[in-house]
Image 1 (tube, rainbow, N blue to C red):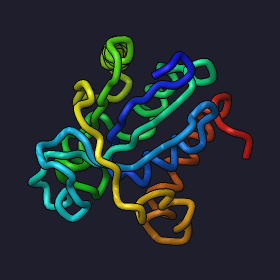
Image 2: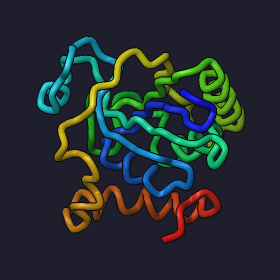
Image 3: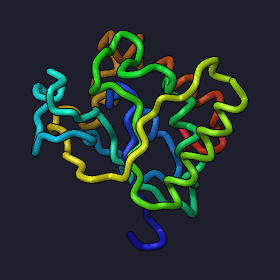
Image 4: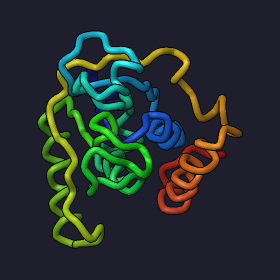
Length: 181
């Protein structure tokens, strides 16, 4: 990557939710849903959902660190899902819904470790963070019907009941780093 773009891969439950959150952020150039952290090559959505591939649903976030810092990206990430539950986000249960950070540089690794230490020390979440932290090995792009899912399906009950509250929370807490609506 050149000095204007970085990539980090984040798993915070359903990738539709995480994608919608980061599409709102200034400096985020692309958010691509996909799969990472497993052992199956070129997995499909159905294979990942069965829980046997080892992959998590993730998003690949490409961002300009001159506009939004890695620390801001990770702070929003930890605030927009529950990183204290293993293999679960709300009603979504399974290893594919685990909280995960797949970093692409040692600097990103240091920042995520620092943020986790600060959150755990503060006890603000009531339980320790169980987020998986590993270097990115391979990212597999999800099928095209998952791309921009929220923006194309805002009236679907899952979007109304699960994604909208996350977006409202992020809009309230992180307005300074969001794109103008």
